[in-house]
Length: 315
Length: 315
Image (cartoon, rainbow over all chains, first blue to last red; front, side):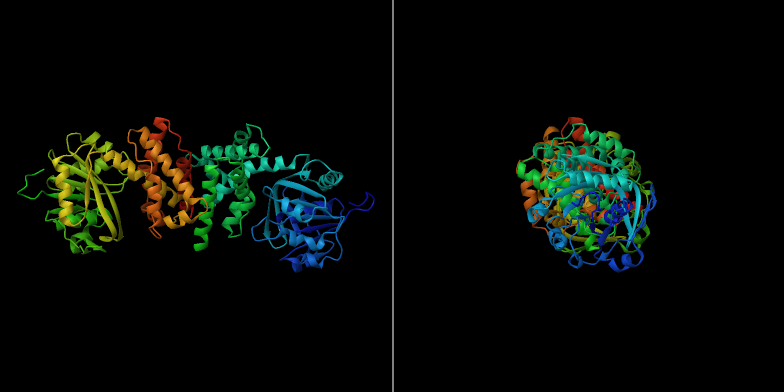
């Protein structure tokens, strides 16, 4: 990363809710931020990125440059921030590689488990910062993001430890107005988030696009969610990332406090968009199989979520 | 039951697929059959019951009498055959009681577990024949039934044993053109059917109205169905009705041979009709709870089926 006197150049790849919001935050922190917007580049070039935040107000920002494709980027940024969804048919390495230079630090704010390894595998000499967002934000129209609540970013060096790059990145996010938590065990943090994510995202789709409130109100719903979260905890422990035993119960209690919340996967499902089911649930199940951990509930929830997608695509 | 020289009078309560079809069969066997049709009585009185059978051809029949309500029945029949769906908000005892005389034998052809006890509880002096239909038939319009395949009836005295009444009833069904199997353990037979029924009916709704082929084709789908059927077998065994260990595997194999089959509950779900979820799945789960048998998969499938109904009713 560049020294502290010149602000580092940032390139965000992905102009959805996450790219739009955290781009606004880094812009607000005074960094020069450019953007790769695969579908909305012309619009965003003309009128900037619109970000409306319930907590922080209007965060509209104009990127330094807007590209339709990473191959158009004239020179590698100091920091490349990847914020696209992790989907089966998207080669994220091919997407970013043209803009990655020798000294480019890569950061990602994405959902899922084991999503870093393809990137470090293909670009082993670049530092990788892995971030997990706890945020309620959605892209409501092209180039338009609504930030409803939260926004905390868990930031760590991948696969573990803390680097100056990770510390710097977290400090910019803080300077831009959101909170961060540094971690030296980012994989464990991904498992921690997967406990809720794999359980509630999968069931919200398996149930046909239902809210967390509806899930917990269904007869047997709470017991089902507890069982699912316990299975993910068991896989995490077998993978060398034990989590606190009370995590499922605490997650249930806090989920009871959120009203009528649609998971990101439920929203994707209801809008007919592709799902991050493999990055989230699929990767838990693959780890479980590899380590011979029984996950009958999660495997069934996954099968039912797949069935919903089949049924929905049938019309 | 009356002696063998006068054919016994039959009153069928329920003019759906089962009542229409087995009424046609008893009519074909030469018995005088009347019908209680709660919603289509006028139509059926005018033009009879239309039954089109893939195997047996046209089985259209005219009931001796058609009533809109059991209270209109002038005198108790020798045999009252109950063929309504078992639904939470339907009091089947109240439905049949006005037509049940001292010597009326009651027979039922209905789905579910433990569905006989309300009837023997309220009418302990009447003989009860419990039947389980293996049939693909549906009511395609008021007073109109399509019999697509199968039709075998498992017939037994409730709670166990074999009576002359059960033997006679089976012989009339055979005389009418369908096959029967007499059993002296009808409750065990209900559990046997529940293994497939609870698993596939529940998942076909939990999946949003999907076919057995779609269920088995889903990634992890077959393993899920095996797990569900094993859970029902464990409950059956704990309830004193052990089933052959190979039943789940055999059921899976035979289900693979049926193409694009919608369970009765999936059809009810897709047509917005009430489901027999309590009679089938709910009663397995209640037995499991009472006997302390773990059924995490079935409880989750039940919760998800309930979620689907919630979601569908939300529109």
